[in-house]
Image (cartoon, rainbow, N blue to C red):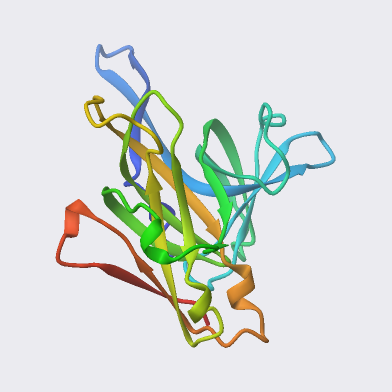
Length: 227
């Protein structure tokens, strides 16, 4: 059975509540799900379409929505979509959905270090979930933040990029933030394209992501099966 919501548990929202002729409450519950998806443009009716990639290398599903184009979102951009499902195709290749809302997330591709690894900051995060869908590695957690700009990205070690196991690091740098600044923990969602590692000519089988995770301080890295 396909896990519709690997990121977050399904949200059950009370969409209608009224009294019938017997004085009893009639309740209609609508199941809402939240997923990281790719915006794939408009269909022939000018409704937004999305691609929901399967876990690891499972097939993807096309989502046909009842809404127009998301504001200021480009094609192939990853975003966090809240929706409900109206209809599923018998072969599960597409779903008709009601799009309820979306949030922008961190979209990026793997970077490669240009300087020695010990010159990059890896400030702590609180990782809640990490998984791969197709050519994307997705992270959901919390990170320190201030009112100023910061860096948060995934970087591979250039010395391992042609190995079967490629080492990567979650770089988190608050740049020139003063030490006496007040930090706030904020949710973040990140989707990183790792298609270069999935190329048939690439020897990589595993991406090993090193990170500073306060939720699991004994675990210094996470492995992702690439192919």
